[in-house]
Amino acid sequence: MTKHHLWIALVALAAAVSIATASHATTGVVRVTVAKAGFVLGAGGGKGILTFRHRNYPFTVQGLSVGLAAGGSINKLVGSAEHINELSDFSGTYSVLGVGAALVGGVAGVQLRNARGVTITLQGFKGGAEASANVTRVVITLDPSRSTPD
Image 1 (tube, one colour):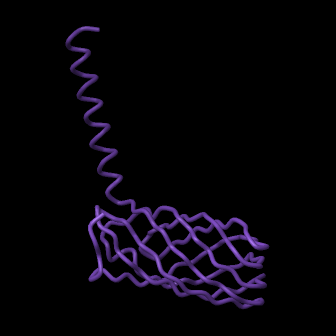
Image 2 (cartoon, helix red, strand yellow):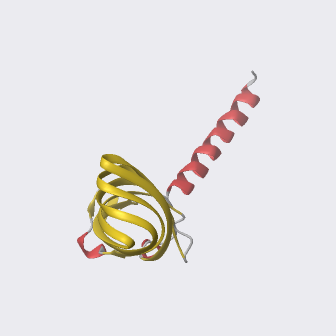
């Protein structure tokens, strides 16, 4: 490889790294714990942490679901929040489509999307006795005043 080709390869690598860094700036890590209970109609609430741009932001979750739901559970979920341009994009009402089952312990997976285009994808542990396949509306309220460094 000539010096010219090596130089081109290094410039291309630097460009790829800078592009990857820029796209990473709009993705956050989400950890949330939610308690749910219901029979046909379900309700739940919880709290979590959004890690975004080297800071941790606490938030609360409140939701209502309609569909097949029976029992109650505690869900400990981890995932990502993508397409966040500004921190304020994260708060709001999300539409949810999720499926899960638990008898003492199980798994849960859910994807949420709000009107600003933020998509949250979560998976994790579900404890309790519950089966669900429903459509849910979830309201996330961010509390930036209580943020801490990552």
